[in-house]
Every structure is written in C-alpha cells, then in structure tokens.
Image 1: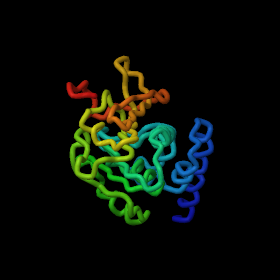
Image 2: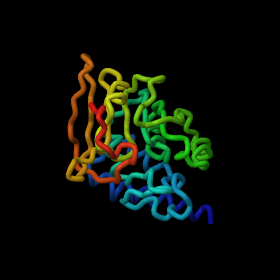
Image 3: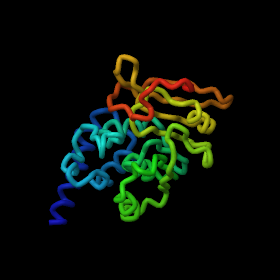
Image 4: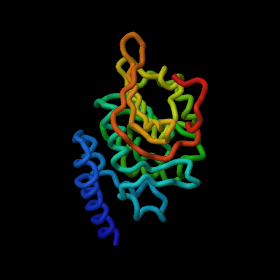
Length: 225
C-alpha cells in the first residue's frame, strides 16, 4: 500500500509541475525540481491530503493559515529571486511547505509564526526530509525577527493588505520582500519590494493573484511603509 501511495504522490507532483507550473511562466528549474520532489500532502492534515495537488489554496485548521496553491507558492518564490547560500525569512509560514521549498534552493530559511499555528507533525517532516537549513521561530509575523536580520529575501506565506515598515527594515541591501497584496477592491497582486544601496525601498507589481487574507495582516495598519 505504501508503495502505491508513493507512486501516486510522485505522479501527482509530476503532473502538478507539468500542468500547473510550467504553462504559467514558472521557469526557475530549481523551484520546479524542488516542488517535484517534496510531497505536499505531508504538510496537510489527513482529511485534506487527497487535495494536496489541487490548484486551490487550502485553509488549515480554523482557516487562519493556508497551504497556498502550487502556482502561487512557486510565483512568490520565483519573484523573490532567491540565490544559493541566501538567508530567507518566511512570515506566517507555520504550514511549512513554502519554507521547505525555499530550503531546497540551498538557503538558510527561518519560518516565523505564532507558536500555536505550528503543527505537531511538522518537526517529524523536517527530520524525515533532512531540512537542515530550516529553522522554526515563534513570534509575531507582523514584527519580523530582528535578531537574524538582515535577510536576502522575505516571503509572506499568505495575503496581506500592506507590509509593516518594521518588516521592510529587515531587508538587506539588494534584498527583496514578496507578498500577495490585496487591493481596496479585494483583487490581488503579487508585489516585490526591493531595497537599494541607499536604503530606499521600491515596489513592483508582478502579476495578479488570489488568496484569503491572513487575519494578522487584514487591516490597514497605521505603520505601513
């Protein structure tokens, strides 16, 4: 039975890459290879595992966290232009899948989220997949993690209204922050913020996108950049 499930998972990942990612401008071969090798179902509760390779974003638990669709996951990571040896922060990333794919790009990855959002099954997955470059941190994702800043890339694992300036300040020179930003009319766009050598931050809209808002980032805060 385990062999049958393993074969089915392998075929599902191959189909995901061929039908969902490649036709939609995901060209970074490292991301394609990582997503073809990492079983998405390991990051889902048992009753949702059969949906692991659908093209939809899946709510987890009470709906406060989400497994983003394969295409949105790949788009966020590709837009971040993560380089080998880089230091990456994944905010609101307690599900663990996006951080795992980032770690497979041969980076050091910090996942920051509130402690209660981390699943008890994540640690065994980290061990089984030998994710030596992945570190889980407990804290408020709206504040980032100053202790290990600056970061080469920061990815928010979900949709936001805006990005707090405290997070943007933790980017290194040339660093990139990527998030799905929800506009006032509730349409969404993948946006990249970049910090230049003078410390100035500019933003660029990459493409349209859709996902539910993260509760913590759902309001228009007074301290946005």
